[in-house]
Image (cartoon, rainbow, N blue to C red; front, side, top):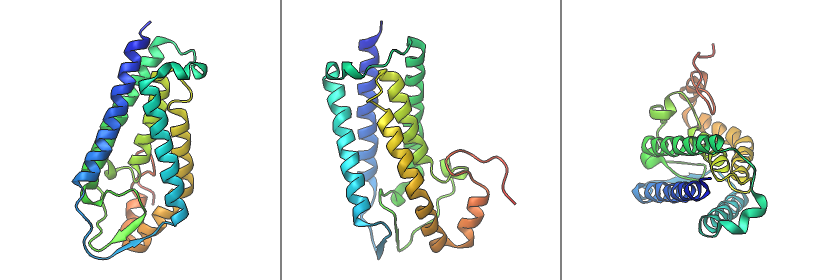
Length: 199
């Protein structure tokens, strides 16, 4: 079996995720002009708590995987390789998303002076590709690690955030960009590409 190899691949993917997010934060210029937060303090606290807790869980698994033997799932090796491929694809998509967002990247729902509507890169066909990438990463790492505690909670948490937060995000964008965003919604999918525009 390739348990050690799969674990090394998982650890590399976890490190890559952290590096991508940190580089995106560092490369984002400091906000200039007026910034209006469109998210509640409670939402920020809950997301920070869940996010940091999950990062800690992933880090512990990367260092001491035997602590998680009780949550192993009996997945065949080809499925674990599929998980490795899905994890790699999710990281590539996440890098593409961060590249497209540039200075617009932020984890909060907000509008600011000079806010622009991004409709290129992965945003050309999908309005929320970052959520898609994170769900892919969660499912991919679950299959790669063959451990339901690794990956699946991330995918479920992001799925819940998508359900609760996306309508609010889109309402904020409609308020900010009006008909331009409505037209953008007609020609794009929410999380997956739409190949035919809606009337």
